[in-house]
Image (cartoon, rainbow, N blue to C red; front, side, top):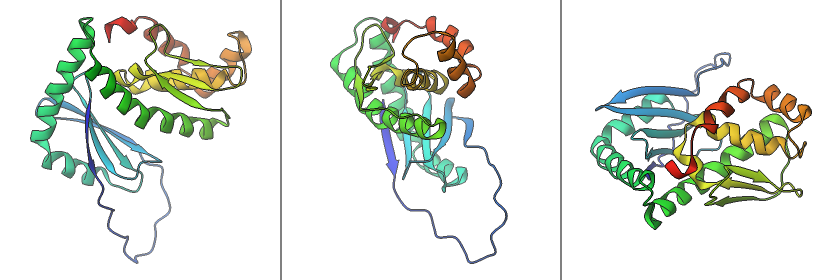
Length: 213
């Protein structure tokens, strides 16, 4: 994984009368030069960031106040950088998939995970009213995440190689364990209340082997 940051602050709004607030989409997807570009607005993002991922696609995160047009302009200005680093990320991902995962792959994933996972965990916790202790990002071999009895949460750095729905499922799964420490009915009732398709995502996640990433 490699990333590129655009930290220019958005231009100040004009003095025109404000229109009533409308709910707008926080995601957008397009293909440029054969590469899938996933745009996603994050409430805690301060800059526009381009991240190339091992799957061969690109994640572009941007502040809520930034427009998709501004993010797309930044992407188009950096098309060559994107093509070059998507190839590098895919190559690193291929090394991991072949069972020859080296320190470069692990460290790239660790850096990306430390940027994305704690921020997303905090967002989901605030959204659904969870409280947790400390959060750790680790290179775990057998689990995607865990929650201790003190409500400290461990997250597998390899989560960043997965799609967003899997990441959110794991984070919400562990946050739910801050309330219910087992997997009885009350646990799943709360999990599916906050993520209605959780059981469907869980089935798909079980088919993904950590050793294949």
